[in-house]
Image (cartoon, rainbow, N blue to C red; front, side, top):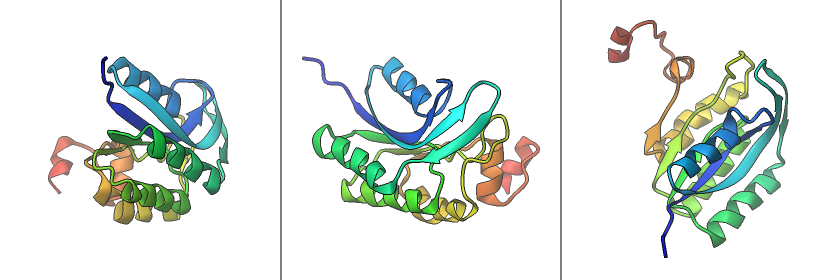
Length: 160
């Protein structure tokens, strides 16, 4: 019997299907892995933009993560949209509780259409609490600028 690598994606939901948890599940499955999910927020969005964000209550998010990790387990966790410091702290606590070592952090902060997807105080908590738990961090340039506090306009700026 084939054994699949198990990946838990923790992110927001995209009603348009082009990003967030829906895109993660497609990518994980395309790589031949088993995809499980925990939804942090429900967005009202399409290819034009994000119209609204509705956070999932913390106890429900914790329940989703616990349900997957206590039963199915995970060989890796991929983290996307975490909209508040409370959510960031909860996800960090669950990673520590279940001793997950393969963590990919995609610090989603702003949608392609420019809609802010994270509260200001959550950025610092991502840097101090979650980034140290991640094996890989995959920000785009605007996210890297927010996390580093530096402007990035060319490859030369990466040396700073």
